[in-house]
Amino acid sequence: MNATTTSMTTKERRLLIGGEWVEGGDGGYEIVNPATEEVVGIAPEASVDQARDAARAARDAFDSWSQTTQEERSELLKAAGNRLRGKLEEFVPLVIAETGCTTTVGRQMQVPVAASRFDRYALGALEPNVIPLPPQEMPATPLAPGGLMGALARRAPVGVVACITPYNFPIVNMAGKIGPALAMGNTVIVRPAPQDPLAVIELVRVLEEVGFPPGVVNVVTGSTPATGEALVESPDVDMVSFTGSTAVGVRIGEAGGRTMKRLLLELGGKGAAVVLDDADLQTAVTAIGSVWMFHSGQICTAPTRAIVHRSRYQELVEGLSKMATVLPVGDPLDTKTVVGPLISAAHRDRVEGYIGIGRDEGAEVVVGGGRPGHLERGFYVEPTLLAEVRNDMRVAREEIFGPVIVVEAFDDDDEGVQLANDSDFGLYDYVFSSDSGRAMRVARRLRAGNVGINTVQRNHETPFGGTKYSGVGRDGGSFGLHAYSELQSMVWPG
Image 1 (cartoon, one colour):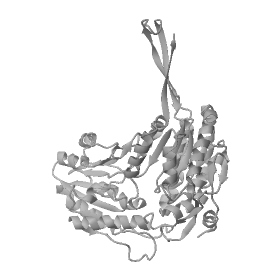
Image 2 (cartoon, one colour):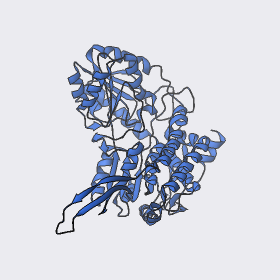
Image 3 (cartoon, one colour):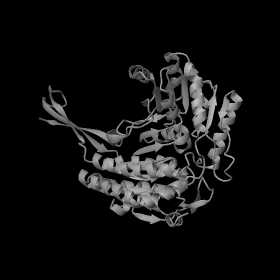
Image 4 (cartoon, helix red, strand yellow):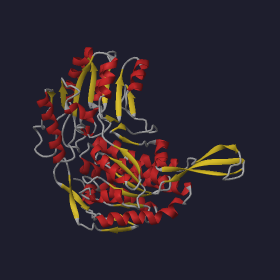
């Protein structure tokens, strides 16, 4: 452990409520390194009353913050991106220690992407928020005299936003929420995942240091759902932006509906990768294998269901099998490591349970299926491939969120589309074909919010979100600004 890591992990951390750093009302709890099972640091355990205090602080700060100029908000967001980028060497070791992500993912994705999101919404804050509308000639009515009526629509801030994020990309996900929310003039309460909140607290410290006013950004943490539930139920919160499991998203929808909160819910996924008979198999294998290579499959957009034309089925299974055996599993700090640990012992047990369920249902464990024999500590599961899977099996229908790929066969394009769509989820699907027109036709039939064609790469300007049980709403690029705003119409006699 280097000196930077030591200083970051031994640092005392507090909650930020209304501009004051305070201790957790219910004490603190340990954050565990998934690779070593050692304690990374102590996170403050906020009380329910502190969560409510944070919501009130954000409410009190809203009026003045919402009236700041677009230029003021842009400058602060730009400063946050620059300061975060300057703290790369401090943030990366902490994020790796908390999440178990590999050094490559930490250095290329976890911290730089968070900084770039602040950069993007520094520009977004300057985007026009007024939509001019053509005048309309209106006849006299019992309500008002006739005349030529001018009008416009403007995007106004929603108000107070509770930002609740998952453990896989703690500061990236949070920056993707608070960036557009602040750009539009909202105030926020940050509530990170229980497993790895330390870097998020440091992210909030960055925002305070660059000059965001007291109460505009608040942070509460906790090891239980209690503080998140308090924010969802608070009358001072106007919107909940949540990324996480479908089960929790459903509960948020039920509770938020009682106070008519605006909801942005990015929930679970079970990405289907439809591999047509004319696909370039190497491209498909590399893309589908990203389930193993990218954060041990702990990503909702992963192509975890390989739905393959029967004529290419065996070829794809063999390609994935070979790939799985040459992916180094181990210490995230070793630059040669490709597959790191899962976030916790409980989640490792859950993933192993699904592998056992797959065996019991009749799936063939082609490769993996257990814990790496050379690692005595850490929450590791081998890259696992399940073949001979049917669409009625639980491993084909439920989100595993780990390094597990299931393979199903189909005989024609219609059946491939039917299998892909026969799912409760609809976040991110994929199509692989050497015929771009054919791939596009198949993609248009998939009931998913996002479809990748011959790639698992993203375009961050696209609207991102899911259909069915994968969520409600869209963010990303300028669509993120739309998500954190209300449309207000104004009409006057011309």
